[in-house]
Image (cartoon, rainbow, N blue to C red; front, top):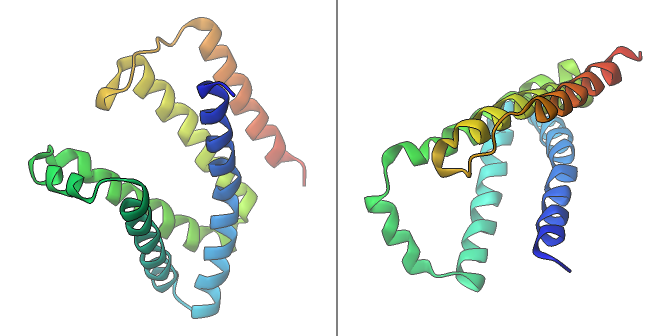
Length: 149
């Protein structure tokens, strides 16, 4: 299996998990009567899983490097918290599909900008007309799926 296929399959699995995460955490938030409490439990479990992976497959000494890393690189934690809190709160009211499709549209826009300018150390992938048309087609597909009621 090529590395491209391997990476694509892992990200496909992660993508499959996003709506599941939204539905499960939204249901937990409703059950607990608090989207924030549901997010706290999600992050505690996620933290435990990340620590386990670090200990089993990685180098715990790498944590020392965090002390010298540029502080803006840690803003991802705020973005994860915003996503989890917002999807946990919004999904029960707006629907998991609607919420995830709006997130997907935001991801398409953000990814195109990050790739085009090579932001945050990403490889530069210019936004060509062909790529823009593909993104527009995906966005149209997201829009169309939400029009069927």
